[in-house]
Amino acid sequence: MNENLFASFITPMMFGLPLVTLIVLFPSLLFPTSNRLINNRLISLQQWMLQLVSKQMMSIHNTKGQTWALMLMSLILFIGSTNLLGLLPHSFTPTTQLSMNLGMAIPLWAGAVITGFRNKTKASLAHFLPQGTPTPLIPMLVIIETISLFIQPVALAVRLTANITAGHLLIHLIGGATLALMSINTTTALITFIILILLTVLEFAVAMIQAYVFTLLVSLYLHDNT
Amino acid sequence: MDLDHASPLCGAGMESDCLLVRAHREAFALIEIMAGPEADAQFHFTGIKKYFNSYTLTGRMNCVLATYGSIALIVLYFKLRSKKTPAVKAT
Image (cartoon, each protein chain N blue to C red):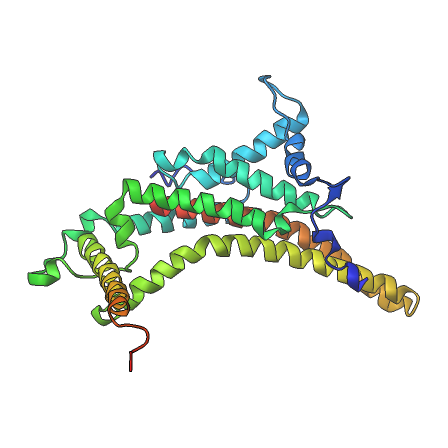
């Protein structure tokens, strides 16, 4: 069991060809498009959920910020569906790869920051110094705020990677422990199995929450810059 | 910003979410009111503080640019100094 602990995080290959592209594109099959006015139950439910999320998330933005609605809704759908699909046994979760999460976080953050610098240069520069800072602390705070700005995309990516990876690892470990304990002590194995069920329920919640947090933070960075 | 237009959650029996959404929007509204050109008019600085302070938008921007400029000058000074002084002194 120990040597296979990180096997689920290795990018899958078949006949020497990477399957990652197919895995990343797969969630889009679960969201069918329709050109009908009144859709079937699945599409109606998806549209209702999307409308709920987009209304809540985009209501704080002005006209300029709301042009990002499609991007943000695609982001939350993609991360949420990828995370949830990753909870299926023996599946590969693309969001456990830091490279992928950095690939999502950096362009979105950079887009928001560059938009801010282009449209509101004065306010964007003034943002590096909190209002009311005592004079002796000004240089230090400017440096700290600059560092905190550049840390934002890294934090976004690492947060998602660490949360999903840690959850998968825990499920793997506790599942292995349950199997190992079955032959030793059935009562302890049963308790461990209950913990495993509770952890799985938690991981379902974490999968959706992390998608929401990622998108909300990108939305927040956009709001600061528009 | 229309804070009265609540999300679909309001009026559907989910009052706690309605309050959460309102609090979220009010916090963003407060941030917008606190910083802005209209808030700069309340400050009356004279002398150098008119251009370098941590209250007005212009003052904060100038402080930030001055900090970056100072760092750039320090880096430039050490780069040029290391080019002038030879690595090993001849004996």
